[in-house]
Image 1: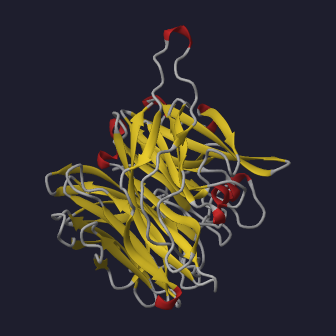
Image 2: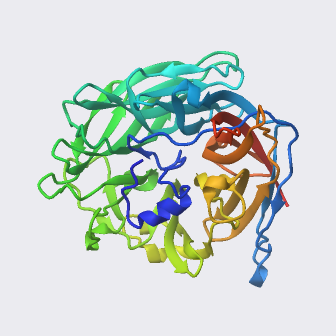
Image 3: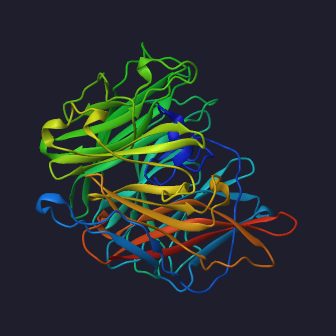
Length: 485
């Protein structure tokens, strides 16, 4: 899994201490990697959460701060598919693909075989077997809504001695029907040529204009070329196609530099896209290694100078009104080890293109085993609420976290709810013991948290092992029903 960002220890802590990029579902980078543990099955009985929140209210007549608590929405989580060592495949990542409030979401799962061949399967809750997407998948970069009736999947496909990036369009279907796909070329291998020895590719897309079934989307992709130099391309597309331009200078790129697309959004007021990337050197760190912003748009024709935003890593940024919400992270150390410090910011339109880490407000420091879900979490902005859902439990090792935990923050730096869903009703089969929750993804209809109650759709790998240490993974789905406290 390609981390490729400043303060990589932030990602190691937040993303399960195992180098996984979550949700990201929300972060969306990948690198060919070896198998990891998989797991769990069965179960009965939803449980309510225990919630700990910052006291509502405020001085000077400020409006009370709404906080939320959550319970599992299903009596028993839905088991979509079971993976074990005998299948010679392991579950690499999961995604939730929303289909609007009237339809259940798709659950996407990327699996890899022992020789690293990847398969992406799109599961319907009523048709768990799903439908496979693509025959030569190398990795998935992002899953997001494209139009009111379709979901976009940005993925990389192998082409022998090169690779191509495509945007697949998945059309909404009735609940009992399998999905239908259409492939759109985004970056062809003739335009760029990733190295065969370093498969690191990262990218994002953002739908900028959708009318009925027609759509437009901006795409940014960071990759290594055949000389190991890290580069980035940007383009704008619709169903008829489009083109990309290189926005980084190949002459100044080097083999130590690693570009990743940390977040990407479209600021409508400025008709401008923003890509946040880390520029870390894998060896000695330098001033060039701080997270940086690329400001891109319809007039972008070539090389664009990046702008450093300061030392904090960007977890996620999203357009909000005419401005943007950002969530940043840094690392502190105490006697117990590394602790993540989170900072939230609500950027006004005039700040876009010239903001710094200092413009974000410090929220708090979080250690493993506390209220922040450290076990392979999904996280991101859902409107003005930043949500995190992941493995939770006592101790400092996310590899043993067996429950689902959640944390809600807002763009003003307030806590909006946290808790653990105790005794998750997934019971191991055949005398196995539950080990951990991994590969968490989340989504919510409409992509916003606006009113109470609201639902979060969640998928994860539930891992168990028998007395012979034979591990099994269940691709599980449930929903969190969250109400105002």
